Image 1 (tube, rainbow, N blue to C red):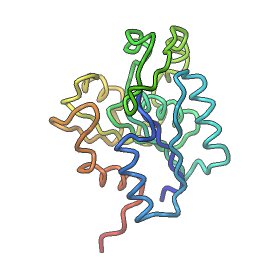
Image 2 (image 1 turned 90 degrees about the vertical axis):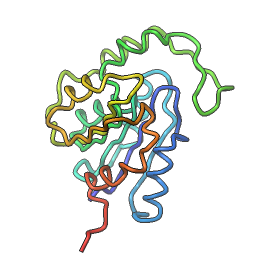
Image 3 (image 1 turned 60 degrees about the vertical axis):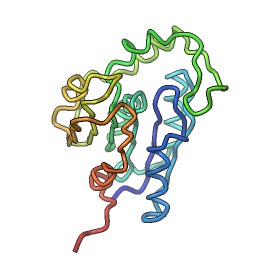
Length: 197
């Protein structure tokens, strides 16, 4: 059973992500003993990495899990490869150094468009340096991948997480607006669903 969860939001997102709030609300009601961390990630991948390490310092590797959506899925993968823990990725970015080069410059946050940040060119190199070459243990991963993702290629995601427990959705979208329908898949992988007897 998972005892500690680190949730990592996507690019331009925040801890106000509805997926994060939905999962946290479920945990508060059904598994209040689970330690939950969902920090606001800084734009710099290197600083985000330092924050992830700080948030999980002292956590038990055998019962912790890291979850991430989009760019957060990329971070979750890097973290799982580093720590040797389980991970759940939701429409994960596979090559963010390639994809985010077009976003260098001023960016508005998704949940508060009045808040801006500068996505610097050097952050692309930081992403490149973090990219794991391959998954050492694909069986430690679960992935929710939507064919209807309008930003990322579902084929590339599926190939990257080959060997993982994959839920491939025929439709949906990048944000997984129907995430509530897939919550059980995530919870089962984390051994958090009550036994059905």
